[in-house]
Length: 172
Image (tube, rainbow, N blue to C red; front, top):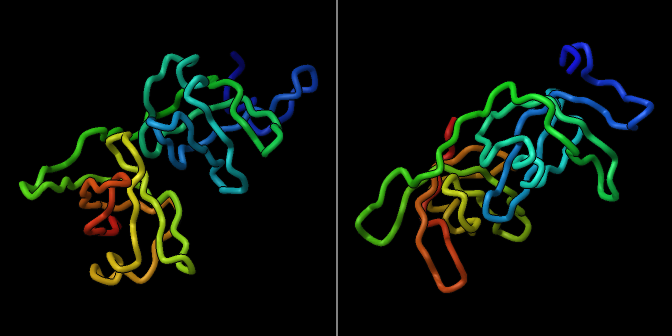
């Protein structure tokens, strides 16, 4: 492999693949996909779990950095292959604490939040199903707004439709 720094941010004519250093934005292990971004956040690149597996990875953590071959797919940039893992990131797959009242507290990332709809979803660190968060919980926790990709600590309860946040704290 060429020196990765010299091969970054160029397009190879023979393969029509672009080699870029990317950082993990988020990855949902239970769904098997996620997104990476370059340092300037100019685009999102889709990554499928099979690309991780082909590189010998079973999981990547928050802040993971890797050099990847990208191509332009039907819906935007996609990772074809991981050339080098610079940093696997911080991996926290287990709940931080069980609270004794049927709730569990763990870390997570805001997947998306739509203030006009009054709800959104959190990608849980445990790799399981996303966590629903409602505006009423934000009001109770005195949180004005959530941003996509923002790191949070969330207390979760299981309900009929899945998992729901009962408390959210923004990690700064």
